Amino acid sequence: MLPISITRAAELKKKPQDESKLGFGHYFTDHMFLMDYEEGRGWYNARIVPYADFALDPASMVLHYGQAIFEGSKCYRTPDGGLQLFRPEANLARMTRSAQRMCMPALDEETALEGLKELIRLEADWVPHSPGTSLYIRPTMISMDVHLGVHASKTYLFFIILSPVGSYYKDGLKPVGIYVEDQYVRAVRGGTGFTKCAGNYAASILAGDIAEKKGYSQVLWLDGVEQKYIEEVGSMNMMFAYGNRIVTPALNGSILPGITRDSILTLARQLGYETEETRLPIADIFADAKSGKLTEAFGTGTAAVISPVGKLCWENDEVIIGNGDIGPVSQKLYDTLTGIQYGRLPDENHWCMRL
Ligand code: COI
Image (cartoon, rainbow, N blue to C red; front, side, top):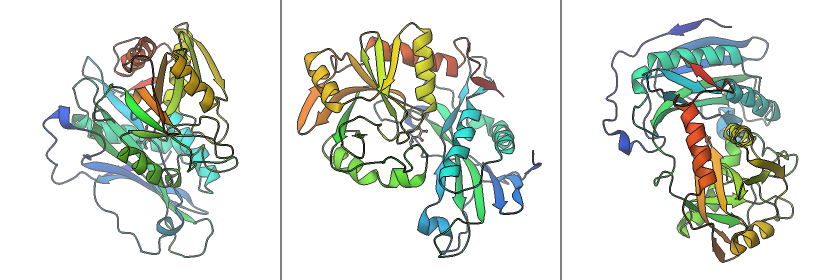
């Protein structure tokens, strides 16, 4: 593990006073963690420094060819005032898998985790106190070579920034409307769909913008070949409940292997729900929503936690799922997962890391 130097900010920012108005990703703490990489040398210069702008050469490769990957995880305040991270190693391991696909170097996960823990200890006062709030953690890796040839960069920057957040959607746990996208696609077999690369999100923005203008919060992506099978929502994986049976698209290489997805599937099994990971035709889900066989739909993700889906729009047709409100399965899973994350329920799977 690399040694980590700490340079403290001379002046601290004013923290947001009203935690009910945090929203998502608006505020950033006083410090950040950085680490550099150079081919032949490996990772070096691990440091915590005051949060500040980067100086980037306009020819920096990340600005042209987009070798950029990121992660999202959270730090929670427990009832005794302590702090805990939720499965941080799983996020860092996923970043290394994203890096491999993007021809970027494997992360020094050990130093990154220690840097994260040090950074959070320094920023402990930034972890909000109100129910539903947390400190969002955004690790990111970008290519830094100053060069216009299309090839792998030899130098990289890894950084972690922190942001106190409330709920991802402005209405919190209120069900969202989702627009099933049947023109654009997010990912194809052999592509980058399973990674958290910036380009996946860049390619999703146009469809998201169109869906928002139609009154929907998010886009539900279908497979990139036939546009028949459900993939994911971009900021969330999708799950569907038929009573006590929960089905979700199988990890097929083009959807993100969500850590919240994995946690929810594990908890669901432990709570006695039946789970199935399979290929889900949109036509079947839509028909089952119409007939009432499908009782609930919800998204899972770090930022959104669990987000009930109240209605789906597909091919100019709209269906309300269940009674359009949060259902008992989504509520139970939300309460169980957040109970563990906030330290109110026992952590039988050893997912939480106390600081
Ligand atoms: C997360 O859930 O942490 C994400 O990264 C989704 C989104 C905010 C990009």
